[in-house]
Image 1 (tube, rainbow, N blue to C red):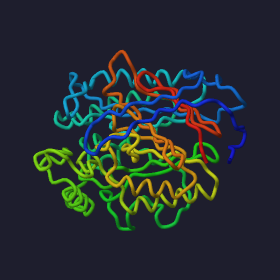
Image 2 (tube, rainbow, N blue to C red; image 1 turned 60 degrees about the vertical axis):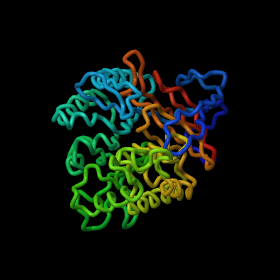
Image 3 (tube, rainbow, N blue to C red; image 1 turned 180 degrees about the horizontal axis):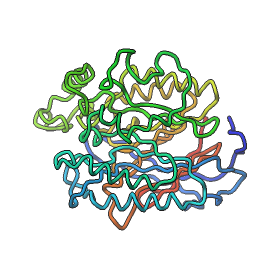
Image 4 (tube, one colour; image 1 turned 135 degrees about the vertical axis):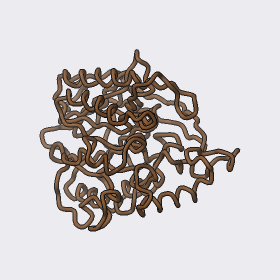
Length: 388
């Protein structure tokens, strides 16, 4: 096992959650099998052994703020606390600011404001309110883009906004694919929003653009929009492209239920770039955490909340030794799965569907042999060992 300098190994127990299989196209909540160690409630310094904390970072997903009364999700089955989500964000920031261990950064996993803001013409004011809260945080914030960002703004707008945190990227030479665009002549509308950074030696984070292939947020005249629409309609014959069932498929549903409008995928150019970064990390014996709004493993989410071409992303990940964890949002119930290649797939519970008396954010503490999640409210504590 590779060790980060100054961070010796440990022999602590593990907290593991595994989700049951589900049939394609159906929103069936899996049963949780819980295997707990003797100390499921974890705090920095409480683990046994010789582990030394390397660094920590915060995680939060699906805030979806809107200055609106409570509502419900697409299927009318889950309550959404649009206005109160801002209060939960503020309390998360307060907690991060006073934590004992020094945080390096926070990962905001997408859907920062709700799509209803676009209908009410309050997108900019809602984003301003949320970003004013984030400005109280004393550490950098890395933002991913979800479907709700793209309901509210064009990709060009997002590129020029505070939600573009690519300035925090580490610059390393990766060859022709390193520029973050499809070709030297690609316009801003054709770019994908992806970058990587290394907070400490031997550890790297890669943020992916799960809506690189999508009909959301792109000008209809662009080639990517046309290609994405063609693919989506080939896979989903429904009039309502947000539905995995509908009149066209009333019983069985879609064979590939992830092909709905509120999901997206990764272009070949982005996957080539992703592969180059992972090759660099393999060569330099780095451990890698991959970040995306949409999950890429069926075991960590419902089938209707997967990236369109999740199998292609998994193929890239599994062709390398360096990836230890894949972090995502999108599924507000959260999920977890340890895949056959030893990659931990962690899907964070969403703020917007969290009752006012609870919470949904976490801090991940990084050791040389594991990631330790200290969750708040709906997010349970987890210890995730590196298996490579």
